Structure formats: C-alpha cells, structure tokens
Image (cartoon, rainbow, N blue to C red; front, side, top):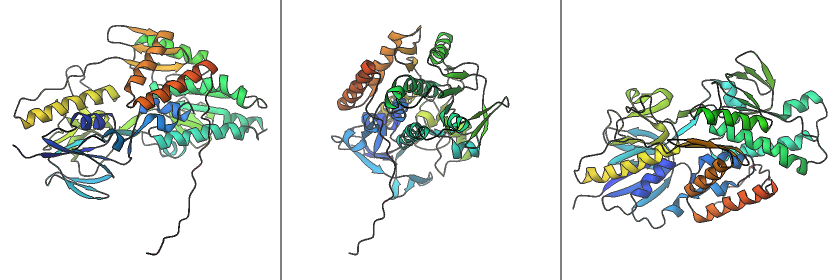
Length: 426
C-alpha cells in the first residue's frame, strides 16, 4: 500500500471545513486543519449577531466537535507565519510542519482601499469578534442618546452610515431600520428615536449590483419603504471619526460608520509575487493548483481562477468555495490512484438577500422572485446550511420569536474586561 500522505489545510472557512470533512477517515491522507480560531463561523448571518438577533454561538461551530469521529483529522489552533515551498514546510506560532499537499483557504479580510482613516474609524464586520464589537457599539449608541440634548450632537450620534450595497450592507441596513421601527419605541419609551437615520452608500448605480435588475430595484424599494436613505453612485472619500466626506463633496456627520464595501485576500509570507494577482488573490489553474508551485492549492475567496464562463474569476461567495473543496477532495483521491483529474466548473445555484420581515430577493439560474416567498426561501436555505441540528433549532426559534413579536431578547452589551493575573511560582 502507498504511504499515507499529509494534507495541511490552512483556514477553517467554508472551503477548508468542507475539504477536511470530505477527507474524514480517508485511508490515503492524514489531514491537519489549521486556523487562528477554534471554531468555524457562518458569515452570511454575521449581520444578525451585530444587530442582536442571534447570539454568536448560534452561528459558530467548534472544530473539534465537528471532527470528533475523524481518526485522520487533527486540529491545530495557530497562525501560519511563513511558508518554505522548496522544503514543503510551514512555520507557525507552535512550530514547523512538513506537508505533502498544502491547501490555502485563508479567505479575505476587509478592504479599505488604502484609506487609513476609514481603517481607524469605521467598523468592519468580517469576524465574530468584529460583529460583537459592532453590536456593543450599536446598543451603546442608544444608551448614549438618552443623555444628549444638543440637537447637532444627537443627530451625529444617530446617523448610521452603512458603506457598501452588496448583500451584507443591504441586510445590515434593513436590520437597523427594523430595530428603529419595532424595538427602540418599546425599549426606550422616554426617548424619541425618529431622528435616527440610516444611510446606505453604494458606489455603483444600484444596490445588489451582481443580481438581476428586478432584485436590484426591489431591494432598493424595500429599503426605502423601511426608511433607509439609499445613495447610489456614491463613494466615501474620507472619514475622520465625525464627518463622512463623499465623492460628490457632500458631508454626513456620523459616529457610526459600518464598512461593507469590499474585501481583499489575506496574506501569508513566502508566496512569490508571480502567484499573486489583484485583490491579493492566488492564481490557480482549473484544478485549484497555485501557479508555479508544487503541491499547493488555493480554494474559496483567496483563489483566482480563469474559466470561459468566468474570465474575471469567480465571485467570492460560499457556494464557490464549497464546490471547489468538493472537487479538490475527489481530485486528491484520483491523484493518489493515478487517475486523470477533473477541471473545476462552477454551477451557479443562484443568489439571495433579505432586507427585512417578509422582504427578500432571490435569483435562480432561470428566474427570480421577490417578497414573502423569497423571504421564506432565504430562511430555509440558510437553515439548511447551518452545520448542527442544535444550531438550526436555536436560530429557528429566535427567528420565530422575532417574527411574531418583532423583538429579540439578546440586546446585551458585552464589554471586554482586562484581568490582571499574577504569575504563579512553581
């Protein structure tokens, strides 16, 4: 029998997790799954954590729980600091590891397009800690508003600016608008929050620009019905923590700017410049193998693949990552058995976004629809994608409670506490 080979997967996002799952108890490969966190996070519902609709644990899954019955999968919580491709070796915070096959699934991070002020003052929402930080900020804003009487200072505090009209920005703006309409009057009967204004800024001509024209129009209509001020063909040129300066010289005063306007690939030291293209993505062939590197693959957001149907690479979404991981697991087995490999071809199963209660848009390959049916479809699909039955039930119960009473019980401000612990003498 051929010797068992070691596959190291860096990143436990959608692609990394699926690949490791597909290789569970495979006789040909020992799998090491590296990640900085000990959990997988379900990013499509991150905005619901930020707006206190779901608890972080509802959309997080401990990696060791997922692989309890896997004899060949080992979890290591660490960060990869450097890769030596000549010797096929990774350097990490906990030591060095050799590999036979290396799979990079490190995803993307918030892209501020080189604007340091935006990076310093705007709130991102790519990770669970960032979503919790944003939730704390949103809830603290409402508390602070009770103690401000100056009209200008109050308006600056109550202006929420969401930058980016993709699914994340649209869903977040809609959730904030529903909080204003249904939650704040009950939580703060002694305060008038009618001045709270939610802006959604989008650089292109419409919200949800990759989707169909019908979905674009309806998403903007739904947002405006909820009271969101939608500004298209509008970009942020600067933000100093108080004043948002737009590309048309218009200014909006706000202490709450949420950045959902773009992503860029995460970076690990060691990759040759020839492998990297725009957006810090790694150039891969049709089998997801990184250009000019031996036994190195990239999946998901970090992978940049040209195909006839996608000459400018695939969209950075979960379905692409999942399909690439499924194909790579099959190709690794084929390679081990000296069988011909299969090229990747993305099967677009559609896209969707929710704007509020009974308001959503769904694009399928041959048709699109909006409204109540789209909203139920969105809920069903997202529930099916959640890993554990327990989490499915938790999310479903929270959604049902919110549906019938337009409320949630999760509005808790969790402030970090720095504890001083003395070192014990042994």
